[in-house]
Length: 400
Image 1 (cartoon, rainbow, N blue to C red):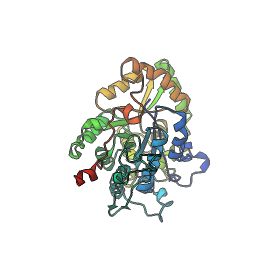
Image 2 (image 1 turned 180 degrees about the vertical axis):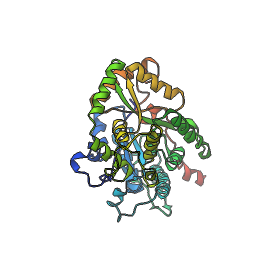
Image 3 (image 1 turned 30 degrees about the vertical axis):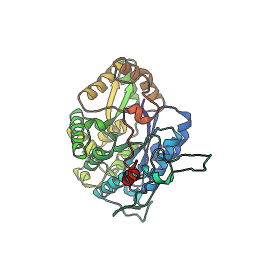
Image 4 (image 1 turned 90 degrees about the horizontal axis):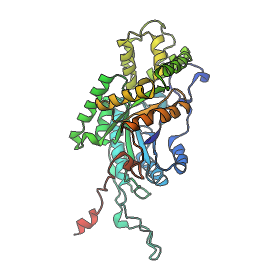
């Protein structure tokens, strides 16, 4: 596998007055950068991807955190750029004003550019560490960013050397128009939820088609949708597992889970009627649109869609033998609906262990999964170039 990915939330999700005992483990999690730093010395090649919000953080701190993780891990850090759409998060930061989606993505675009500028604060060979002369750093190779805009005033430079990867790998998560634009301009990879093949193909073409205006090739960005996988040694064994898992879903929890997605308490709605279309009007996850599309196409009731969402989390859902699972993944890849997958399972760690032991060998046999790491850094293993520092030699050229 190329990476481990840790999502993050900054508040308890909105779901009415549901009791804490029915919350999921996802609502109580360690801060990603801390946990990934702890994992770094215990691993050697796998990428370390963590979410950090651009809405409730500052560029300098984020640039420093990620550069530090990149140094600690010898070049395996990655940042999942998120804008934190939950209004509850706003109540924990800065007085509680919740920014609308357009403003959040405008801030995210500037935020990401400022972070990259800070990563370029020092040329790669600025820190000479010359004990004989006593020279620690060459100030001619320092480049303060001096950024001033509506969103930020950041002078720089960053107080850490340029990281091993130049820039840690940048991911963007989402399916909204703002997420597509941010990914097309800034990201190396994009996380998304695309359960329907035809919709996934259109999404893929849309995002890749936006890149030319930023001077980028479609191959500069990998689209990586989630895939919820239940695998057995046979199709029948996998279906039996799925039936057990599905029958274990508590309906009340399923409604709570869906309520968190909708940012509204759905527990008072009729269980055997469809979700009201008015939910589309509330500012919430783009994934809610995907879930509502599924429920309307299949004419699902609230009871049915709540169980379905708890079952699949809105992702592509594959149940079957290693051959069946690999067939579906290969079809998605070859039909230009995905460049790779975030592998999910209904139970941990057993579900992931089964994917690794059963599905990955089948993909490797087909030449669709790596059998060894290409390099030492995460960028190298993804086949990405190390970005050059645009400031390198600027002062020397000006002097000449």
